[in-house]
Image (cartoon, rainbow, N blue to C red):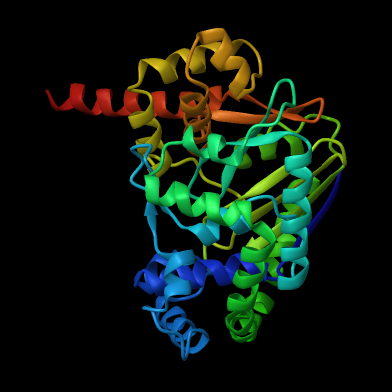
Length: 361
């Protein structure tokens, strides 16, 4: 497998995360994490002030795109319109702002022409599924099926109905901030060059398919011929990506706080708490049982289990975000399968908790 890692920042994502933190007055510490290649909170505070100089938090356009919106899936997570747009259908190999927005507009048009529809709202972007008979379904009907506040669904309808217009507005808003931020990130990107080389070596020397499955919950299979990794700086634990079965490539971002040699944690991690909350639902347990047998799409699960398609789409995204599912590409279409490795990790930590309780009694 050909492996390429780059330390060059993806400016569209870095800029959106910076403005999301600025508009919602998040502490700089939420944009970083401990690690030898991460940016210290004090330096991030300086970046926030410098890159957003002259911008008002009360600006209506900024609030429209960046004001946080709570997800309605019980996760306690938030998103915003700008995230829904830029994590939507972009080519993760794009680096410049202009190339990224061109990719977004082109891919959104192609997605609609293929008859795909929005199936779930997530913290970073949205999920899609193909209409079985490729019949026309209005965007308003798509969004009405999703779990979200009426106000946020109305915003999504407005933006995605006029995608070219609204992405042009967002691009113009991001440009001056991205220019300043790129210069501020440059020394940190140069500093992270050894980390990019370490990631290349990790995947080249190990079993790349096995590592992808463990680290990115992506079951790439033997058909994948190229892997592209991009370092992230302002979400240093994030790893959004895409599996392109037709091109036989995997693109994904990995935060600079992520270690190439990951040690097995001795205690519960944040994703495990999220997973345990999700496992309390009988419907989600039925879905996991169905996907334990074979990879399935949201539509296939809804039909087999006689569940509401919108609810299944939402739950699939939540289960995947909680590392309970593996993503596969079957004949160019996304399918999901139960991630037994994650379930085993949770079980081991529960057993350790039980053992600790037995020793104390």
